[in-house]
Length: 421
Ligand SMILES: Cc1cc2nc3c(=O)[nH]c(=O)nc-3n(C[C@H](O)[C@H](O)[C@H](O)COP(=O)(O)OP(=O)(O)OC[C@H]3O[C@@H](n4cnc5c(N)ncnc54)[C@H](O)[C@@H]3O)c2cc1C
Image (tube, rainbow, N blue to C red; front, side, top):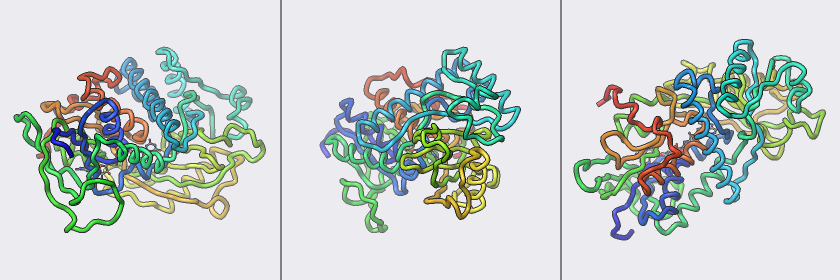
């Protein structure tokens, strides 16, 4: 490393790597990425991607007003577009097609009707199909009787190979001469009144190429680095580094599996059989995406966990949830012959995600210390929102402004939360 005062990035998931790469591409002379001591959730995420927001527009508008819901929707769309474009240019396997909400209950239909009207009212294309219009659409013929209607949010839905995405991003970071990658953790940030921040890092002794090899206690040492700014992109663990954020974040456990299609073997050209269709059903408690090679991603079933998975400290694959996910998918797609002994899971996994208490991602400079920037709380959309947030924070740091990043996402809104320390 040169004698420049580096920008330190804490976290080697999609968000941190994106921030580092965008900083370097925008001309930051020295960036030190401290990648963390656990596998990033980005590298094991199932890979459903979508624009807009995971929740329906009505939920966001009810909590944050329609005008801001529109802004947030655009933020999600821009995140989707940037991710798709980066993936296309860097050989990351992905497929994009459609984002659909499958409506299974009368009250959900009522909500979707209001959502689509509100979306159209602020210029967001969305469409609700039911009855004859649905059955004669490319989607309707394959759906089970459980589905009353389909909300079509347009062409911002899909699937990305999350592992390859993370790997390609890591390779791009490793190849950049302005970036040094260090395995370890940022232990503390201090020096708020000084001209540079002081960052304590517990790291492996030899900085350089990232490896996933096991480490021993003897491998690590504590080092102190002066830093011009810190970007904290450490997902749920961000509260350990920045205690003011701890009360704002809630964990949630969810699980998914991959299995085989096609969803409708009667028609080889059925839209459900093409890769890149992302859907959710039953208020997002069930979700999935069609993948290349005829594979299917199916997820959800959080409601079968204690407290619907909220405040979980670990996430394990539960066989009863895998069975539930498969059974629910059979009810969504009447022609799909999935189920135990037929389409058994090819792979299954579970993970902990990060929900801010007001259900808005937390992205921007910390109140009281603008040289610490944070990005977390993406609620199931971190592959796109994390990647885009990395870009936004880099731009904010390098140019002093980022109009694409809504100010309402800044952590300043959490000022009044009680401090846990
Ligand atoms: C069940 C489940 C399904 C999901 N499905 C999807 C999906 O289909 N699509 C989607 O877009 N998103 C999905 N997500 C969300 C997505 O996985 C995350 O939002 C995203 O990966 C977060 O990326 P990140 O870079 O912010 O954090 P991570 O990828 O978790 O990276 C954070 C890194 O920070 C490191 N770290 C922690 N503390 C420190 C420290 N003090 N110093 C330095 N480093 C530190 C950690 O070791 C870790 O490596 C899902 C999440 C779950 C749980």
